[in-house]
Amino acid sequence: MEFSSKLIEQAVGHFASLPGVGKKSALRYVLHLIKQENQEIINFADVLKALKTDLKYCKNCHTISDNDICEVCSNPLRNQQLVCVVQDYRDVMAIENTGLYKGVYHVLGGLISPMEGIGPSNLTIDSLISKVSTQQITEIILALNATMEGETTSFFIFRKLATYNVTLSAIARGIAVGDELEYTDEVTLGRSIVNRVPYNNSLAR
Amino acid sequence: MEFSSKLIEQAVGHFASLPGVGKKSALRYVLHLIKQENQEIINFADVLKALKTDLKYCKNCHTISDNDICEVCSNPLRNQQLVCVVQDYRDVMAIENTGLYKGVYHVLGGLISPMEGIGPSNLTIDSLISKVSTQQITEIILALNATMEGETTSFFIFRKLATYNVTLSAIARGIAVGDELEYTDEVTLGRSIVNRVPYNNSLAR
Image 1 (cartoon, rainbow over the protein chains, first blue to last red):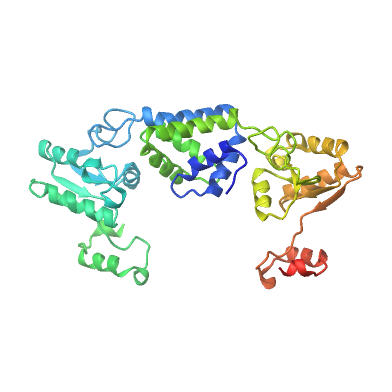
Image 2: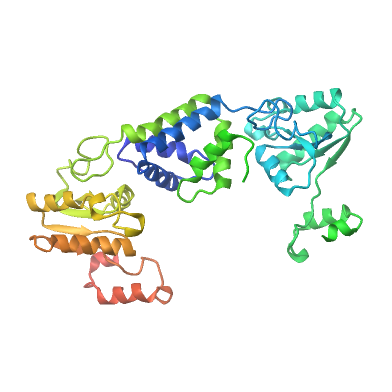
């Protein structure tokens, strides 16, 4: 795609670097922005810069937060001995939306991925270990994606925590609610049979 | 969607205001940007601001250009008497990509749309009229979208130019190259029969 303006080319380049955005969509965004009010664009640009300078992370669980300690970690009604390990902020939001989890979180900030050059030291795994060794934590729930990177990271954490007196669990893999058995892939269906759970009223809700 | 950070909420709001971007995609973009280098984000923000302050438009055809007169208008090999009227910069790019048009353009900057509060005075129609009345222009090609707004705008320009000695034409509507007759909608198929063209070698390329 050739542009008659260097500025447009730069702007399209920036938008096209976002995940899942191609040059055509990027150009559409840029042409949309050109038509907006001056102040709107200035605010947009300022917020972008602020993302790097003003964004704070919870000192306990590393999630994005406006305060030093996030709302979940500072909530006395949450079980501080139950820690759910997730990849990023979006996963915290997803689990919070279920309304069924009453523990706290630990945000890794990514997954181990040699392909992308992300090793254990780039994540908050050390912080998790020191949390387990210094605080009273009874259970760690591994809630990472069922991908190669997710499984690798889970296994790495499992090995690191093996010597500590803490229960390690992983979220259940199985057939999604509403899905049909015959269309489920073999690996998922197999896991859902191996990891079957006692039937009780709470499942029949 | 509830966010634990006001800054994230603002950033997501800005991205979600782009056409076709929802809050989930917007959050994905924001979390991607957070992981980028500082300088990358600063450049992005600066380019956004520059869109409003530094962007130049061709004084002749109103397309986006780095110079006062764009490359097409200043090209002596282009036929300055043939003007193609388009909605915006993207259409200029699309037609240029065909490599088959040797005239110049006139970018309206939008289409007449009472629903969106866009009237003829918001577009560069006056500039087109004055161009026709002062310059030596033989043909105006209307290349606007085949939508309600596009047809309205075409008709408005047709009425405005009726008293001038200039040929008005519209791009052909018909079955796309490679499409099959039986799956084409009736309106398009009907138009393609009414507006049939003499068969010659150039069509058989």
